[in-house]
Image (cartoon, rainbow, N blue to C red; front, side, top):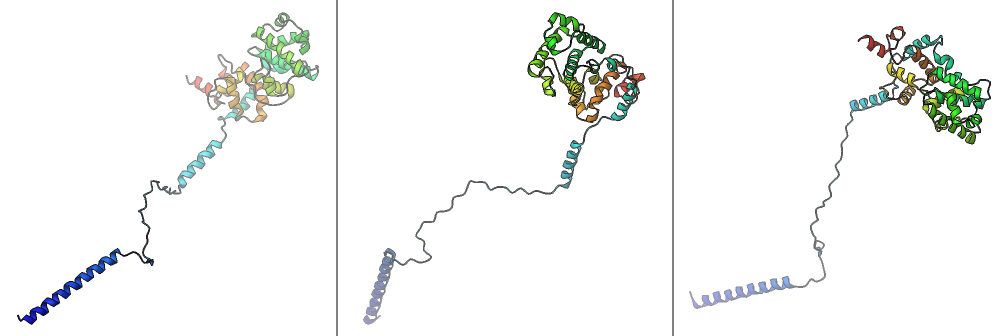
Amino acid sequence: MSKRTKLETLNCTKKLRSSSQLKINHDEETVNAEPTGTVSKYFNPKVVEPKKKSNRKKKSVEIKYENNDKNDDHNEKNGNEQEKWYPKNWEETLNFIREMRKNSTAPVDEMGCHKCSDTKATPPIFRYQSLVALMLSSQTKDQTNHAAMERLKAHGCTPTNIVGTSDEILGKLIYPVSFWKRKVQYIKRTSEILLKDYNGDIPDTIEGLCALPGVGPKMGHICMDIAWNKISGIGVDTHVHRICNRLQWVKKQAKSPEETRKQLESWLPKNIWSEINYLLVGFGQEICQPQRPKCEQCLNKKLCPFAKANNSK
């Protein structure tokens, strides 16, 4: 290689090195340079942090489907619940009892509480005597109760006279009714209340009557009927309680007369409420007796569950 050629090659190399150094310096200045104030629309100086994941659970959407069969069953059930329960053959059974009672030969027909008051007395005294007769009648036969009321009326059966009568004399007048000593106290205390709060008359509501000493729902409802000619409920005594359970006139066997009353009132038409006590008491005294009922003489022997069960034994 000639001397001239070597010299040209050396100069060319120097130029290349110088050019590379200038480019490197320019790049460093560009990187380290301060912003000039013009920001690109694509440049966001804020630091964008990633969104935090929410812990809240999304609500699930319940999808409901029409179920016509289920709705029909529900409607049918509601309809059945609204249907009123009636004992089987109750109207036919009742008519047979009326037939057996048409001659009115039972003790209650002539000596029941509705026959004990003085019909010639003033209305308040008539009502008072009706109440006293009912108070004496608890667990007492009609014959015994009627005789006691006859003695009381002869003595003077008014609230004022009874309050002024000694316990000893009053006891002798009502004896031998059941629990006569206790009933002496009940009658005297009741008479005092009537004089003080009712001007000698008796309450005209079932609530007022049942608030008196010795007066329960049976007495109260019958008294409302006899004394005030108002029907407030059914008077259920041991006869009515026994017969209704034997006839299955209660949806389920009742353990007490009060339970029988509530079940009986739930279905028996109200226009029969006044009649039913009178009918069943006489029927119980003559035919459907507590011990050894006369099922063979009863017109309901083919309808009555109790009679059919006894015949099958």
